Amino acid sequence: MFSHFIPCGVWEAVYILDGLLNNQSDIQPDTIHADTQGQSTPVFALAYLLGIKLMPRIRNWQNLTLCRPDKHVRYEHIDELFTDVVDWKLIETHLPDLMRVVLSIKAGKFTASTILRKLGTYSRKNRLYQAFRELGRAIRTGFLMEYLGSQELRQTIQRALNKSEAFNGFTKWVGFGNAGIIQNNNRDQQRKIIKYNHLVSNCLIFYNVFEISRILQDYIQSGHTIEAEILSALSPYLTKHINRFGSYSLDLNRKPPALDFGFSLIPSY
Image (cartoon, rainbow, N blue to C red; front, side, top):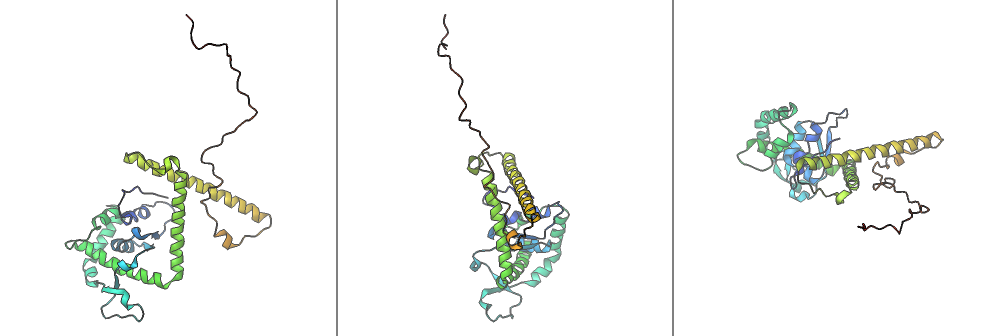
């Protein structure tokens, strides 16, 4: 439905909310999945305040800080995981500022990526960043505890990320020209290449879904039944039937035209 062209080396979490907020289609999702680089404490906080549920798959948990709701709270089996305490007073003090940022984004005054770029680095002088960071630590801690306690949630996130990886693999297969390398340094041309690649990919996905649906409908109308478990395993990213290189007919019986060996290419004077 949308794609972003971002600079190399940028933490993609900065741009993760823009597409969802700019979505003008009839489908209005409220949950977004990402990998490790699609999350940070400010992103968790901003997504929460915008009414978006951020559900990423995060690696290297040992590098994250899990916070207790209160310094007196203790847990029977997982107490050692918590190394800090949420500063609720800081969040309460700056909550009006946080809400003003959210309302400005909702009103289209600036994008979520704009504020997230400004909140990208820690600063002791930036109290707004500290408030976003503190709220994000609380939200992320709750999410990680839910992630630990729910096998269903872990499976849901894994399935969502697998779909994303399958789509990325499909678009890479579609953009096979020049081995998928963009050699144009013009930003507008680079955007066009990405957009056109996604456009062609979505056209092929639509075709695959249509053909699969037609085949299944014919199969069911012929008196057969299909289990829901089988349907859930179908994928729109099929490539075996797609000819990327075109069709070339070869007529082995065709004879080349006769040559006039008496004709001279050198003019006579």
